[in-house]
Image (cartoon, rainbow, N blue to C red; front, side, top):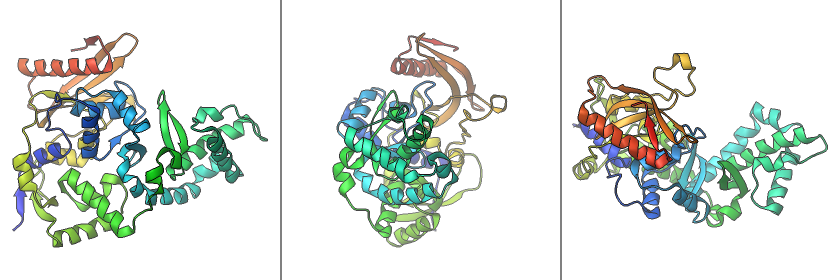
Amino acid sequence: MMDRIPAPAAARLFLSAQGLCADPARKATKRELMKTIDQLGFVQVDTINVVARAHDLTLWSRLHGYEPRWLKALLEKDRTLFEHWTHDASIIPVCWYRHWKPRFARAMERIQTHPWWEERMGGDPGAVLEHVRSRIREEGPLKSSDFEHQTGERGTWWVWKPAKAALEALWRTGELAIAGREHFAKRYDLAERVHPGAHALAALGDEAQREWACATAAERLVIFTPRELAAFWDDIELEAARAWCTSAEGEGRIVPVEVESADGSAPQIAFAVEDWKVRLKNAPEPPEQIRLLCPFDPVLRDRARGLRRFNFDYRFEAFTPAPKRLYGYYVLPILEGERFVGRLDAKLYREQEVLEVRGLWWEKGVKPTKARMKRLMDALETLAAFVGAEEIQGV
């Protein structure tokens, strides 16, 4: 008979694997930051900056002493991280760069057959690509804005839009890499100059790539279905993940389990890493304090899994028309210990140095006791200090 994992145990295992059982007040260093990113696997990057950048909030929630300059140093000086795509734009340990080479190859085929390519590149995409390559080769790292005023035989308007598309295409396909950012704008350079050692490594075969994708995802999920394995890196097909699960189960590396659901739905048949009981025994108690998570936090990226693990139904509503939003534009999930107890719509006014709470909603059955409100204010003060706000309004 397969083991049955209670819902609280499944939640604890996932939070621990995702770095949310560790004390966020532990000593923060650049080395500890790198260790945190390794544990997560990747950190999503997003342009929205209502409170702070997504990657900064995700890392801060796990390491309150985190300083964004450390991440910049890891990306642009130490080169131990690189930027590319998982399910979305992400920051990834460079030790895994070679595993992106199959993705690079697939990207060019997909881009060149997409209608967007024809619309943006005009009648001679080869010339535009070579124009971009040659300038970067000769001048070094460039931003898309560096091409805005370059004139060509068809005029400024023709060169700018295709050049911007070409930069993104050459980055997606691995020919260029992000050498750094200025005010969040990417600076592109030849990948062989940015990550010479990693760039020189050959791609692995299909079987080795599948092993890496599934084994590393399993380590960071602990309990999973084949679909969740395939979705973690967004790199392999579902059938490949199923095949890996069959093989890994036969080798005793993973075991089938029945997982209770926190939302009262039927138990889920899934897999768990073989030593899940040891991991559960060794997982520390999550901090009792309240933590405010990024809307893009990996713990809640899969909405269905968030419901099963935590009975917390979270959806990012920034792209939902305002009249149809249930909560707000930039809502931070509220984690208390290992329970999601509410959500908070926040906005930072940088010039005024004010962090405003525009909405606060507690989950059903959660009471805003004096002790809980004190923990919330402590969390808001910690966030305010991180984002440079001198005042908190709205609570």
